[in-house]
Image (cartoon, rainbow, N blue to C red; front, side):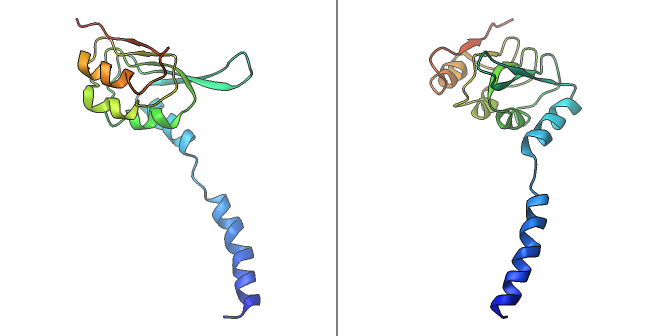
Length: 130
């Protein structure tokens, strides 16, 4: 193949590839909304867009939390009343988030302690056993 032919192929392929790039954030929001979750985008004081993720009392699994991690930056995640357990916390590890509500879940105290070790020190994690 000649150099000119390669140049023509690249001129066609690159714009097509760019138009096919996947919107991971949009897909994640749609998947959570299909489970009746609410993802609200807010603007903080600096004008930065942050997400509030409300999945309380919904049929949310550990694997669904993979979608949550895609929505960065997140200010608050409400997972209260879901079936999330310690295994799902891997998806929340390392997030920069102000508050995570894990009340009425199957998450243990040791799971919360392990999660907190990966979060900013001022992150509030709520866990109450009922």
